Amino acid sequence: MAKRVVSVGAHSLDAELMGGLALIQYAKQGAKCTFVHVTRGERGHKTLTQEEYGKQLLMENKKVAEVMGCDSHWMGYLAGKIPEEDIFTADLKKYFKEEGVDLVITHFSGSLHPRHIATHTAVTRAVRELQSEGYHIKLYYGENCEDLIGFIPQVYIEYTQEEVNQWIKGLNEYEIFRGGINDMPYLNYYTTSLKIRQVEAGTKLPTRGYMYASSIEKTLG
Image (cartoon, rainbow, N blue to C red; front, side, top):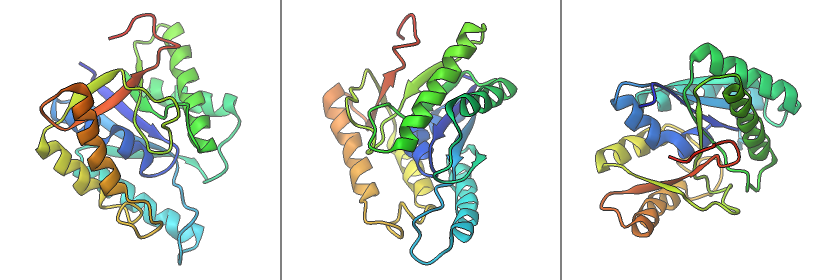
């Protein structure tokens, strides 16, 4: 079983949407779990400046993680200002090595958002390079409503209703999830998705789908 698990999202909320349920389950089994935010996603608030909203998001990051039994880490990049791929990849490798990460969840490549694609590319490259250096680290792509172009689940994982409730409770610590920033119906979308994946997989409990990082894995499973 994985002992050090991270979910890497381009913005606040992304990491928790893609990997929140998985990290809740791993944390219950004794793993140390972290939501890694590449940027805070501080642009777009209706009344707060980017600086003000950025500070709010850092507080929300911590609260969300605590509810889910995890912690959080901001890489220090500002919204819209992710560095070039070489620097981004090197920063990720450094963090993964220092933390002893053995499982990573991140964005799939088929995204509508350029920062999601950049994060996918850098994380995938970082894991590939670490594997080639002898590190035992696995990578999966999580489900995100902005990353569904070509997203076809290869792994289905069931979660208890208690775990789902914990996930939703944590997500509600974000103003954006509650509808305060935009009109995306996050709650309805993600709870419905759990039912759809359950039907697809023929499982008995709420279910999420994940994809293997097939381009860098020699074997699946």
